[in-house]
Length: 160
Image 1 (spheres, one colour):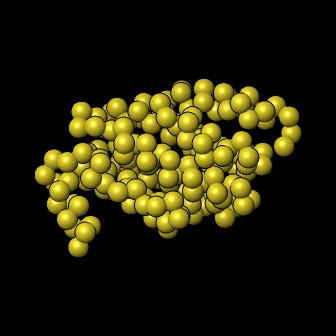
Image 2: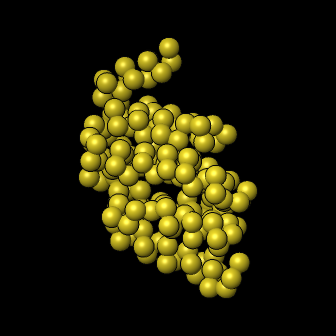
């Protein structure tokens, strides 16, 4: 099958470009498919970024958080999940390491928040989103800086 061919190609030293990001309309039913493929390529292990953080939160956002959100919040979760995977696939090269993934993702996460429509999400949804994060899992302080920046860019200083 096509998936078996992809995995064989990956085993022969391909980079993450050999891993496919599910189309936006399928991301909700396949939130970790890209990360599973990326893990096969990079072999970061269960304590690595791909399993411990990326797959964990893609699944958590889709299965636990999304049912609690408004229509705008649900759309945001799908778009954000897709955006993170798309950018990781396009920006991670053969020289990328397991240790470099968190800072690589931090470099485009803010863009994904904005282009995915975070500013259109009701404030109650953003609070649910923030509450869903296990703070010990934050990859770097850049996440907090991005959140602080979004607070002002989205004008969350005023109640939505």
